[in-house]
Length: 200
Image 1: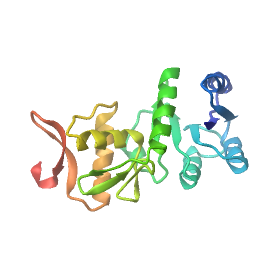
Image 2 (image 1 turned 120 degrees about the vertical axis):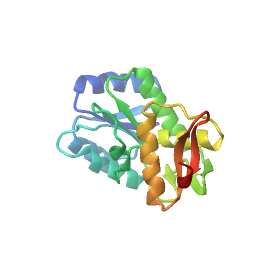
Image 3 (image 1 turned 60 degrees about the vertical axis):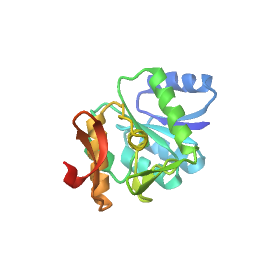
């Protein structure tokens, strides 16, 4: 897989480039937003990893470019994840909060790539979840974690993921955007389930 890795910390870039190349990935690096944009203009990538605090060009702008190109992106952030981030027009496919272990990054890469190449679709209530397209109802963008939550609910299971309340708040907002009366609610003795608004 060809990966673009952009982060302002050159030591981190160097270390993770070696790790990714040891995993068999061809890796291009950039230490600022200008370098990342230049690499995107001059090559094609299967996946990108971006630090949210890239200097010179806002990471959100680069995420938007990657969204347009259909390139999955993992966003690295020092800030705690908030539902508002998951409602931005330019949405990463996965979010990792510093500090993280190398194994967490490689797992995020593998899972994001698996979803992007899966061809899988399923329903959440009366809406279609397009897994490789990372979309709900054909238009609203989803993260990989949101897809996992919806897939677990679709199977009648209780979702298990970090930042659960943040992802569920964002998903319920996305259902509202699509003018649906369904939402994810917490039911006593059952846990999280798809419900109609009047049920809670």
